[in-house]
Amino acid sequence: MREDVIKTAVEQNLSGMYMTNDQKMAVLHQIREEKNAPRMRLRFSAVLVAALLLILLAAGAVAAVLLGGKDFTKEVVAPMAMKTESESFTAEEVGEILRLAEENGITVPQYVREHWARWGSEYKEELMRALVKTELGFYPASWSLEDQNWYNRMLVECGLADSVSSLVPGEDDFTEEKVLYMANTLFREKLGLDGDLTDETQYRRFLTFGIDTTTPGVTFKQWCVEYEDLKNGAQYAYVMLDNGLVTRVSRYQPGAENPYISALTEEDVVASFRQYFGDSVLGWNMEVLEQFYHSFAMCDHTKQAADPGVRHVAQTRYLMPGDHYTYMTEEDAIALARKACKADESLQPYVIYFGDDPNNMHWKISFWEGTEKNKQFRLYAQIDGKTGETEYAGIYDGPWYEPLVNAADHASVAEDKTIRVYEKPAMWRSPLFSDAYWDALEALDYNAETREQRIEEWSREYGEHTNLWPYAHQAVHWWWDMNPKFDVHNYWVPGIPVEGEHIPMEEAKQIALNRFMEEAPALFTEEELARLNVLPASFDYHVIDGEIAAHVWYFDLQIEFDDGRYSDSLFHIDAHTGEILMEDISNAAGNG
Image (cartoon, rainbow, N blue to C red; front, side):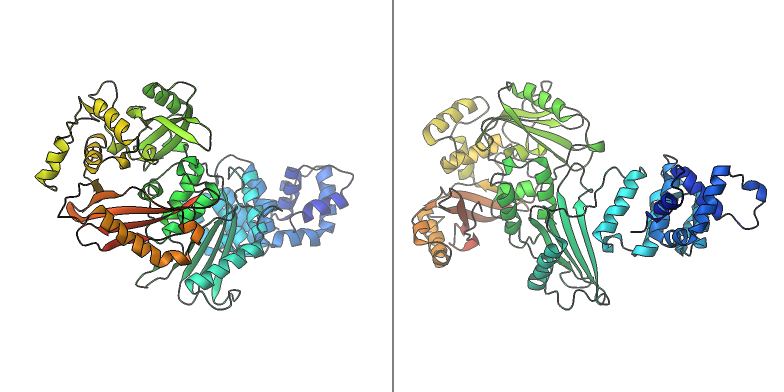
C-alpha cells in the first residue's frame, strides 16, 4: 500500500525535525498553489521552507502518492474532513479538492461536478467514495476485502461511521477461497449457474464480509457473495453467517415468469437455525430472531414449514430495541411486566420486542423458572412499547409460541378498563358452523363466571395440555380464551367430529400411517421405527376467506432418536373423503 509513502519520505529526509500532520499537509497544499499566485501568499516559516525544499527532493515519492484516488483521499481529503464535525464539505472545500485532484491526474466523475455546481456543498462520505472509486472501481462490494476494510476504517477515523463493519477474515474465520467454493457449488447445483465465474466479461462478482449494519443491534458477522450475469441480467446471492449457517441462496431473473427463485425451503431454514441455536425458539435471543425473520422471508414458500408456531414466529417482525423504535428501556419494560403479572424476583424474564413501525411496538415478557435448558414458563405480559400500557397480563398457559402472538389477539386488562379476555366472543354462534356445534359448546356451561372452575376440572380430568381434551372442550376453550378476531384470511378452528358425517379418527390415522410407511423404510432404521409414536390427533375446521375449506384430521407421527431429539411427520387428512391434503414426511431431528 502507498498511503505511508509521504510519511516515510518525510521521516527519511527530515529525521531531525518534527512536523505535525497539519504542517505536512500545509506543505503539500502550498506546493500546488497556482503558478501565478502572488509571492506574498507563501509566508512559510523557516522550518517549513526547509521542509518544502527537502520534500521537493522527494518529488517522485510525493507524486506517486497523489496520483491514485485512494491515496489522494487518504492523504488529502480525509485530513480536511477531520477538521470539522460537519457531514459536508463547504463549496470552497469541494472546489479546492476537485482542483487538487485534477492537478494530480485524477479524473473526477462528471456527476460529482454537476452535483457540486447545483448544490455547492457535498457530503464528505459521498465525495470521498467517488474519488476512491476512480481507482478501485465503481462498486464498493467488488473491491478487495482489504480495501473495503481500509475505506471503512478511514470513515470511522473521520467521524463519518460509528464502527468498522467491513472486516478482513481472521484465523478463526472462513477463508475467502472456502466461502467462494461453497457459494459457487450451491449456485451451480441448485440454481443452474454455469460458465467461467472468473470471466469478468460475463460475470460481475461482489464479495463482502462484516457486520450487518442494516439491523440495529445485530452483531452477526456474515459473508455475502453475489454474481451479476452481464448478458441476461440474472443476479445470484449467497449469504452465510460466520458460524456456517447459510441463510440465503437465491436467483433473480428479470423478465422470467418466476423471477425470484430460492434454493432454501422453509424447512431448510428452520432446521438450520435449530441446529445452530437450539430446538426451542424460546431459547433464541433477539439477535437470532431478527436474523430468522429475514432469512425465512427470503426462502422458498411453496413447501411450508409444518409447525404453525414456527411459521408464526418467522412472520413476526422482531426489532432490536434502539433508535427511534424504543420509547422505554428493557429494564423499565420488565419492571412494568413484573408488576402487572405480580411476578416475584425469583422468576427470570424472557424478553421479546416486536412491531412494524414506531407507533406499533410491543414488549412481550415471559417469566420462567428452572434452568436455561429447561424453562418452565409461568406468567407473561405484553406492554405497549410507546405508551407503557399493559395490553395483557396473566398466567402462561398457551402453546410454546404464545408469548409471541400479536397484541390484537388479546384484550387489554389494564386497571382502568373492563376485563374482556373471558367475555363471550362477538362471533359466538357464527353462522359458519352448525347449531349442533354451538349447542355442544353451550352444553359445557363454560362462561366468564364458571371458567376458572371448569378449567380446573378439565385440567384435573384430562391433563394440562388442551390438545388432550375432548374436541368440544378444546373448541369452547379456543372460542372463549383465545377471544378470536376474524380479521385474518386463513385460520384453524377446533371442530367437533360427527359420527356418520366424518370418517372416524382411527380410520384417518391408518391412512396417515399407511402413507408414512411407504417412505419410512428409506428414512429410518428398524430400531427407530419401533419407537414410532402417534401424538393425539387434532380435528379442525380450516377457514379461508370466511368459508370453511375443509374439515381436517391432523396427525403428528413422531420418532425419537438416540440423542433425545425427534423428528415429526405431519399429515392433514380430509375428514369427509380421507384424501391426504398435506403431508410432510421428515427424518430431520427437531423438525417439529
